[in-house]
Amino acid sequence: MRERTALIVRHRLVAPQAGAKAPAAFPPELQAVLTRAVKDLIGGYYGSPAGWATVGYDTFPGRCGDLMRYTRPEG
Image (tube, rainbow, N blue to C red; front, side):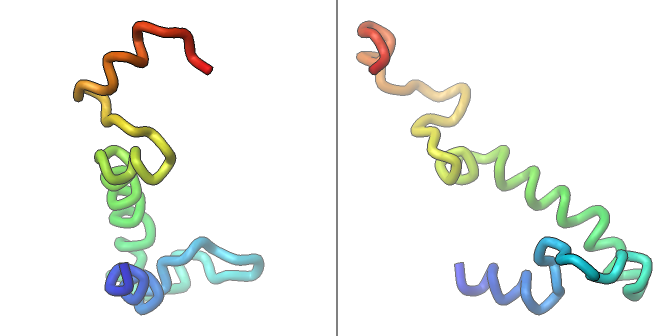
């Protein structure tokens, strides 16, 4: 996790803050990262089992979960 955080900080990929520069203010190679790769990385992560676990789901879609859950009321 530290390596990921360092990469994000090093390339300034954190969420834009008020008064932050627009992507056009950066060099072209960084613009590509900001406008394309970040979106793909976030989508790929949250579309994975690890991303689903991050938001609190126990079972990734398409995998068997707790069968007892389906035989009794939620609560």
